[in-house]
Length: 289
Image 1: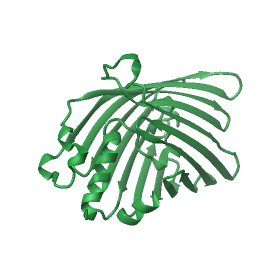
Image 2 (image 1 turned 45 degrees about the vertical axis):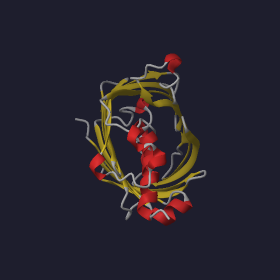
Image 3 (image 1 turned 135 degrees about the horizontal axis):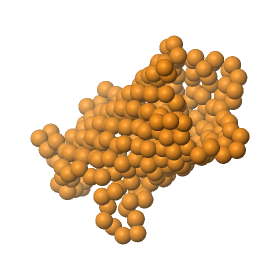
Image 4 (image 1 turned 45 degrees about the horizontal axis):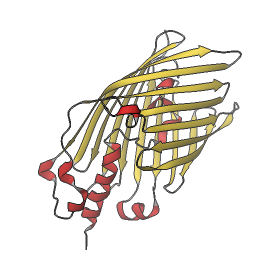
């Protein structure tokens, strides 16, 4: 019978094929930093903003999954935004690092309506620690075919429509710019749709829907509702169909610092075996001079 450690490594490797290969990681704090999935939102908060996100999945498991993301967003005038996103993934014997620069442009329409467009491009490198790999139980995974890769070119494209508190977004994340396959078959393998609306009051609500389509992975549909109290403290929940739910909350420390935390159970059978997921976010927005 396969041990718990063996099962964990199999799940880690299976998820690693798509996550470390420019797949789409899950971010519970997307509601605070839409730039994580869509370059059109680069520098949309206004002002220079730095953020750090740390996600640890399958806590207390010997094959826990960790993901760290740093973003820096800088507005360059009223219409242009510049940003940097860098990430580091560690999934058992698999690891990945990536970094991308992003550019966004805002087109003002009538009234409170805006269109946003964004592009990002950068590099991605994945590797496997062969010294720590034990293939005794994993012949069927063809692990021998996984090799340390050279730097691959990746990127993303995004567009968004804004009207007062309503936001609609579309993005093509995880573009494989190194692909040589014709007709963009491999290059355009993922897309993401998002929609949300935030009310304006002392106690405001922001419901959002996110739909993710990835090649070789079951489509993901998630809904979330966030309640903001005087824009100083917030709490909410996320439900992902066929995956599970997450609860989150956070607070503003002064007018510049945001701190957020999310607790995710994931799919029931996985949660029972490998425990839950914790995600932390800290963001700082520099004051305008």
